[in-house]
Image (cartoon, one colour):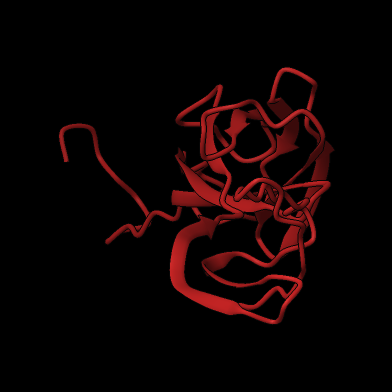
Length: 168
């Protein structure tokens, strides 16, 4: 990744800053080329290194661990930046069964969404994927799991005889 810019050296010192909001994530190396008014110059290779990250740490849970189909489950959690600061503005997207549901992240970094488990879903382990993105394009992802309870719909009996006597 490369950024080219210039600055002024005063009394042998240079102070430089830039807004990293539009810079892509990755590692950056600072190379400095200093020149005086007479054309004399000096290069300083690898004067500094830094890394820009765009990762969000996401934690998510559900309020019910073993729901039956048709039951509403609240998916809730929190989103923090790499320095553990709360993500104050952005969206959480919840993916279930090929569908996606979007909810806003609150100012305290929390999110929640009431999700109804489809009636026709298979019983067993169900993974719900949650992605978070803030307004600067930083992203994070996690999974919350639950166990969908089986709901018997029909019972088939196979009898050997049409007539059964007591005690048989």
